[in-house]
Image (cartoon, rainbow, N blue to C red):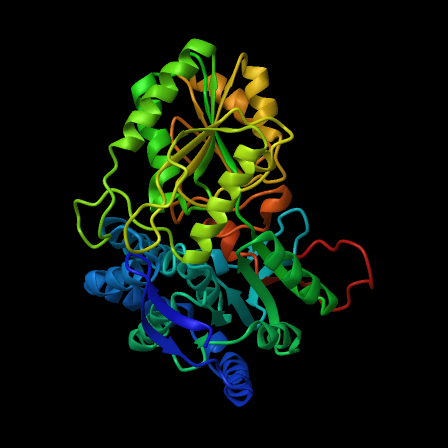
Length: 468
């Protein structure tokens, strides 16, 4: 049974769920296709907005219930789980409020009579990860349901109760059955869903391997794909940045969600030898002070990673890094306690031959670098196959903008760790994927920008015509 709830803080198996049968999968696709063609796309946008606003209100009303599910299934600190529910609600509200303007036809003033109309394209498949089980879904469901598309959602195997709760959420909010459908599908079944002609696009957040496999299969079927494949985000501390503020941001950027964040600050890059030593001392001191414990306890500062598989991968990466010459400044070991706890870890002495120089460290492990110049920092920041987010810390914000312009990433934050909000487009470049979620950019990823060009009766067969 692939879909299971295993409490990361204890390792205890709490619940198991059977995979969808082929018959159940066919019914789900057929129902989604029918409700798209005969109901959802035809509804006034105000009706869809009402349902989306209802879903946001239910999230806020039942924050504790949903947050507890997140913490139970993937180990997130309860305060961070509550914040995730609030963010998911904000995203749904954002699209409920803005969809009407995003859907409004846009006249092409340089070509009188021509206008672009925004239309949905059909049934979409979302494949979402475990690290933000409500937020990741909201940033797909919010814009795409409001655009008039319908959504089949394959969630991660270790958050099945979150997946079921999301399906109930949209049903309780008033969405017709088939507008949002949870799938407990196998990898093989998902391949068939991607190829099904009734499914018109796929949105994936996950590993490079998963994204490449989905994109290949969807590409053969000529279907649009949006991919967010993670990152190895640099956090650059220039020589003029206030030390304490940059340290606080570095700890937050690296340790939020126990380091399991696509835009986490995974590589700390400090300009200047003396500053580098002071920064490392401060960084290590702050990490040492993080107390591990039950993620449901508000006093806990360090929770478990999501699974034993995730823990073992991190331990293997640390071992490989050390074998290639890296030094463990702090941590590096599994904690002697039940559950999947890893000591906060800082690695230094990482050269270009080290495997983790180009790997993503998805957990409470930081790669720490000290460089001599701003130019060195930029080169190191770009020396990765990823390009999701980045952070730059400096008193001189204009200088920060100039450095940001030279960073190969989809997002750069100056004097903040990389973050997210409904109005900010989210996405990367290089191996971090393509396409955008959130803001109006995310709204337009799976729509038909239909040109309607009107000429007066009796007009010539080609060329511009001035309408009277």
